[in-house]
Image (cartoon, rainbow, N blue to C red; front, side):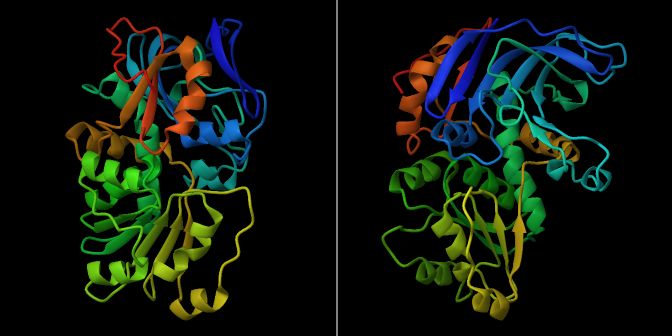
Length: 350
């Protein structure tokens, strides 16, 4: 069996690995079919990802086919195509007891703290498998990043008619923007990279700010004299996160969706004067995935058009550095594994 292992920062290898064991009573053996490449993978490759340990089999944006299930499994059956919730929680700590499984005290994220799905086959807890009739494999692999945006917007409880600023036009920023629109709120998107903003406008008709003009002036124009009531920062940039409070209205909220390994220094007089509510947002919960899958199925949330590069598992180690170089123009790279379908490789030049 093949696996892609990040041995240490900058060193990615395709290795022969052992077949997984038979699934336990509450587990399922799955064939990995699609793997989305995430900013987490890029940061881990660069040695700047929080919570990451080496060596590690990457891969947490997964679409799989169920091969076999344990004796106590009743939510999926062999042959089902599923998205995988890659967050393994303990079910016992105070966060889990409050249905905040995404911030479990002993949380293990596939492809980060434990080995992930950049491999041929893997055994997973069956409770982490979510099927939805009519969703293709590419879409199922995109459920996880869409879920991060969905959870972040749920954290804010933004309401219809409010104006939000999303800083960072990568895939998570785009997912946040879609979830804001799903709530009936208005969104403007900011980034320092004009190419990313061009792509956002092309993919989902985003309203964007001009990175060469003063941000606050533009926001006041969009808000008819008011700053946004919610600012989402999806950059992971220290400078951006520290400056986010400058662009939120008095009584507003700042939500940190991206994260950094560094300390943050926030200007307390500004925070206090505006009485800003500050939230962090981590991953998503399984209870959020079911309603979100309905929104994906109906087309309200969609990653259609995000995939700008595609390859097979045995090509990942060679192509990965090129994807890093092209992150501004490739929203999502997708890895095909053991697919019986025709593989389109017209974007493989990335």
